[in-house]
Amino acid sequence: MLTSYFSNGDTIRTRRVSDIVRSGVLDVPVPPPRLLADWERETSSRMILEPGDVEQMPLARTLMRWPDYTCCVQAMSDWTRSLGLDEVLASGDIALMACRGARYHHDAAQYGGSAFCNLFLSEDKGLDLHFAATGHRIPLTRGTAVLFDTGQPHGVIRRDSSGFDAVDFARDQDCVQIFLTWELPIEDAHVARALDVIFDVAPSMRQEHDTEEVLLNGERVIVCPDSGRWRKVE
Image 1 (cartoon, helix red, strand yellow):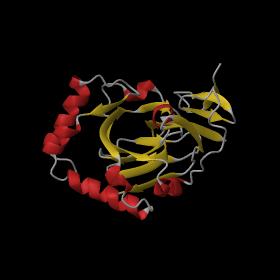
Image 2 (cartoon, rainbow, N blue to C red):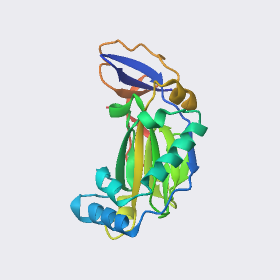
Image 3 (cartoon, rainbow, N blue to C red):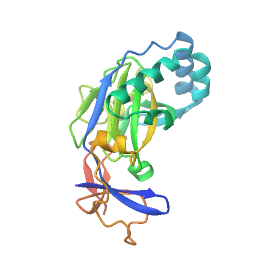
Image 4 (cartoon, rainbow, N blue to C red):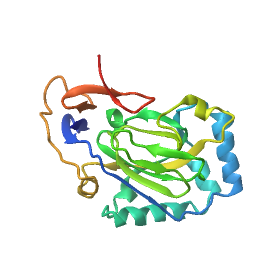
């Protein structure tokens, strides 16, 4: 069992890491050429986006260059409501992100109290979002929407690959994906129900668990960045 120890105010609370991944493909507008060119400049020259990196992009500039941005947010809001999330999306923190592939990782050491909700804005470039522990493999294309537990190891890999290889994401390859991401509170009843999260599954006040982390069957683990498999912490 995967257990997330996450911050709850001044205390550490526990929960089971959900193996549920919700996904769909939404009808979202094509970004205008001016915006695509801006994203290209940002990822190729203004920021250092190495193979496997996931970095934040300037959202304000995108908002100025994309009148149809609100259509994307509305489509995502409609989708999450169909999952029973009510109006949770409207209160979640939002960011614009870019990745040149993504090494396998989990985000529960920093975002253990959240679920991630992503909307991919780039065209299909032959890449998949792969959850190594659950087997979910989601083709990334414009309009791909995903809701998942931050504690699940995931990466962005080539569709014909079984793991992450930096060679697949060299700078001469057209392999950058742009996406919007929302942080949704995992303790919200709607989010917890959609992902079937069970709370308080282990003692949470012990001295050795004073930070956010994920344990596998009670043992500290890390994610292999190439395969996505759990490894014990030596």
